[in-house]
Image (cartoon, rainbow over all chains, first blue to last red; front, top):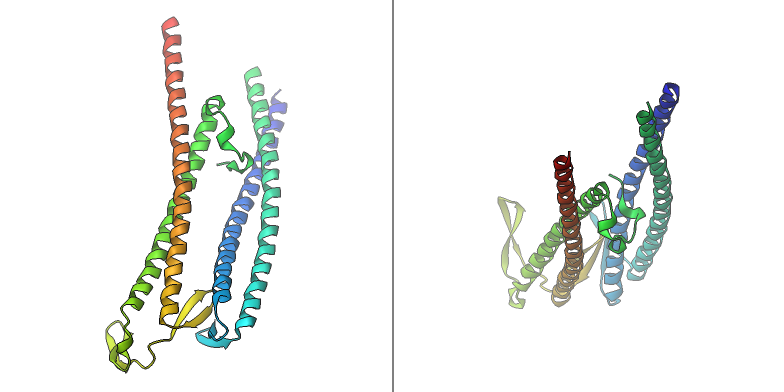
Length: 125
Length: 161
């Protein structure tokens, strides 16, 4: 029995470790996704604003400390492209997050199962 | 510390069927979420104030100010004299490094729209906040009920023993 429970503890520990690592990855991914979401939002706001402009409005872009004049149409395209790119990133980030969460649920279950087994083993002693 | 994303429909679960541990976990998650919401709200309020103050600054501009002398702050304690040359052109930071030149009316309009937009977001989030707080208090209520029941049961067992 003792040998058994020792093996159980070992298994439980390694399973717990995996779970905790997944948890860390998950938190990182959530952070990343929040960042992407806010970037997407900001870019959307900028595009809305650019779309409202008349052709004679002047548009500048900040490069370092300098404002450089831009073509309106070009700016629209650039921001549009950026939105596309960020959306793609956001999607892949969400996908990864989902799979990590699934993994986490699986490991959580097995941790719980092992804990129960361990408790049963303790009670049997 | 487990995330609740696995159970997407917390409203549809009968709270009374959950164990005390699960309820406490849910409560903690909701408290965290509500804290996050409060932080976002604060940021939004700050944002709104910033836009509103830009708008106010523009409101105080008057067309007859052309050619007036002003003192331009170089630092917070040093000024150089300047003269207003162009009353109808403002360059506005619209985000992500883009700046747009607009006339006085257009600029005012921009800030007005921004304030309204932020206000909309604030209202949306406040609604969510109210929902979550309601759910949280429901959870807390069930937890208290369960705790009370557990205490009673223990007392009965003690009396029986």
